[in-house]
Structures are given as C-alpha cells and as structure tokens.
Length: 85
Image 1 (cartoon, one colour):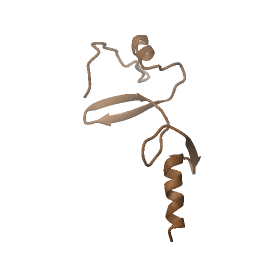
Image 2 (cartoon, helix red, strand yellow; image 1 turned 120 degrees about the horizontal axis):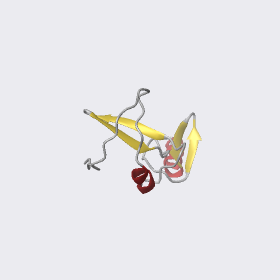
Image 3 (cartoon, rainbow, N blue to C red; image 1 turned 135 degrees about the vertical axis):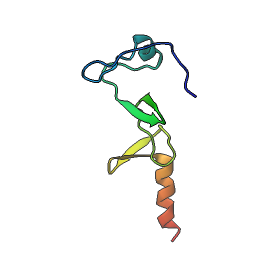
C-alpha cells in the first residue's frame, strides 16, 4: 500500500526528480546508490536496489552465477536435485 509523503517535486528538463533528503535519510539511500524503478499501474515506484536470490528473494549469503544472484540455501537444494538421480 502506497503512503503519501505530501512532498511534491517537478521533473526537470532532463527528466530528473530529486529525492528529498528526509526520505533518503529514512531509507538509508546515499549518493551513487543504485535505485530500482518499478511500474505499478499508473504509479512509478522507486526502491533502493538490494541484490537478492532469484529463487527465494533472500538477501543473505549470496553468490553470483551467470549474472544472477543465488543464496546458499537454494544452491544446496539445486545440488541435491542431481544427487537424487
């Protein structure tokens, strides 16, 4: 559920919008942090990017495989698929 902050910002001539310092501080967003952009109906949602497992969404104990993040638990489950045959 979206919650209004009451803050209004204009898009500049280059298509940029400044995220207010109060929101950046609250969400621990600092200069150069990656931000994900989602579309939800007619809404644009910005979210601080946090790598997560492509299978379960976990952000703990991640490894990278072919440019995808996978957690240790899912990696171990996948390994057992081939052990059972």
